[in-house]
Amino acid sequence: MRNDLGLRLAARTLWPLALLLPGALILVLVVVSRGLRPVHALSRALGARSANVLHPIDPPEHVPVELRPLVDGLNDLLRRLDLALQGQRTFIADAAHELRSPLTALQLQLQLAVRAGTVSGDPAVLAKLDERLKRTIHLVNQLLTLAREDAAMNALTASFDLHALAAQIVADASILAEQKQIDLGLEPSGLAADTASCQIDGESHAIGVLLGNLVDNAIRYTPRGGKVDVSIERDGHGVCIEVSDNGPGIEEGEIERVFDRFYRGEGVTQLGSGLGLAIARQIALRHRATLSIRKRSHAGGLVVRVEGLRAVERSE
Image (cartoon, rainbow, N blue to C red):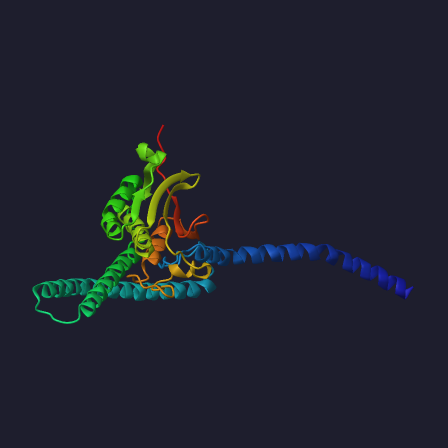
């Protein structure tokens, strides 16, 4: 009798607990999820940020008091990183700007002295000295362009004719192409006749720098008597630009590394600084476009493609 009475009393005591336990678990989960909601919002805000965005975090609403020191500490770290990067960009821009004029003047003085005969020496040595000066001036100009691009993350954009810009870039590069007897041209397409189809949103100066670097690289690395083509087309994602050549190409293992700053492949002897493709990719990313390189399947050389440039929608 005592055992039966104990079992009945235990059953009467435990069945309310069995009903309350799932409700208690659900209540704990709801409370914990609501309490961690600001943490999840902060994590999403940080995960969605670009590496170049360093402005302070706007704390989400109803942030617990315990998270305020964390948010304040992150904002202080972001401010210090932003100041450090701004100082680095300012230094590069100032140094490049101050070096460009003296180096250009030095090159002109050397050329004038050689023509006047006031400088004597081995012509091969003088030619190599002139080539070194040209490479240094090119590096300084690329550093100045890189510093300007780093500081132009929030530059104003406007619509412009991409085909007209490409035609101007090809015309400017034709002198360098003629020196190497390279066939440089802008391939005709249906977009040339339809001006509205070539209108894109972006910063025309930056896109000009991007396309100019791609054309300049193609000309420099294509052997004498080669061919460089520039084409523009529309696809479902916007407007695309392609620059193709029949040069020596790049090894598969180096295709991604050529986008690194100051990287130059082994055995490269052409004039360059290793910054052209890095600047081009940064401009493409700022315009939410992609820059890719692939080998030509039917012939030697490379195809550099920029796709995803935002086209201006026609108004009906």
